[in-house]
Amino acid sequence: MLGVIVSWCVTLVSAALLLACGVVLRCVSRARAARRLAERMRCVAADAPGGIGISVLCFGATDAAQVAALLAEEYACYEVIVALDRQRQPALYAELVARYGMIAVTPPAGVRELWRSCRRNFRRLVLLDRAEESAAGGSEAALCAASCDYVLPLHGATVLRPGAIRRLAMAVGERPAGRTALVRTRVGPAVRLFARETAADDGFGRRAQRRIGRAYRVTLWEPLAERAPGRSRSRHAAAAIAAALCAMAAALRFGCWPAALAASTAVCCLATLLYVRATAEADAWRPRGTVDPKRR
Image (cartoon, helix red, strand yellow):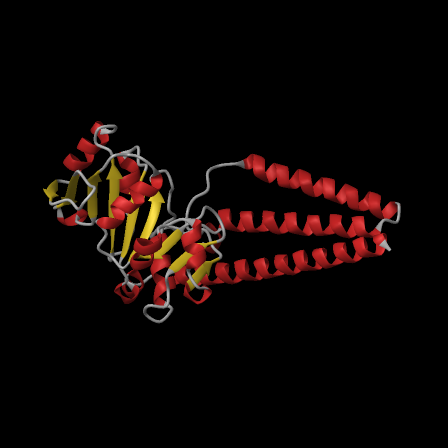
């Protein structure tokens, strides 16, 4: 009797996992097709869909090149707010002030200094000086200086793919006004875009995301940030697939069907993971002016 119960449980769990793999593959394939369509539609109107403003809340920056990469984004309706501790990073702080010709303005509560770039080509940069306590504190301090309707908390070491800001704005613009409180990615490094009112009330943590109703969430099955190089993960997944195949062969040889079903399910799940990872790395957003070698 126990063996029958175990067999049925393994069968049900395997069916649920296989169904989940099919749903993930369908979502990733549809996102890939939409991304390719967006690459072809490179026009001025796509740069500002609906005039949706996005404030990038950058914390943990250690190099001026990280800030310059954020300012290079080709989207008009957004700003970059950098939270730094002047006492811990005086050289970087002074370099940003000098490079972008910033002027001091009245800071909000909890911020020692607030600077805004006055040069025309860098008018979207805001620099604030606050005590470095935690990543959450840096995001909350930067949130006080944000002027756009949506905010994107981002660590300075995270590299956004070209067109990521525009893609987030398109995801918000595709829905009625006020119907989007959170846009999140499921492929690649996590990227979270919050409505400013939602972030001001609940913050940026996982608990805050769970409080947002499903009708107000948008999930993107495409990578918007670069993943750090890690070939070892792919090798480990390939080795796990080989081990699962061996286990399935052994289970079939000795007539243990539940074990064979579990091993085959593991193979499908690992293969799905490898496919999603390979798709994310191959279909990166290309900067303007680049040409796909396969289309030449």
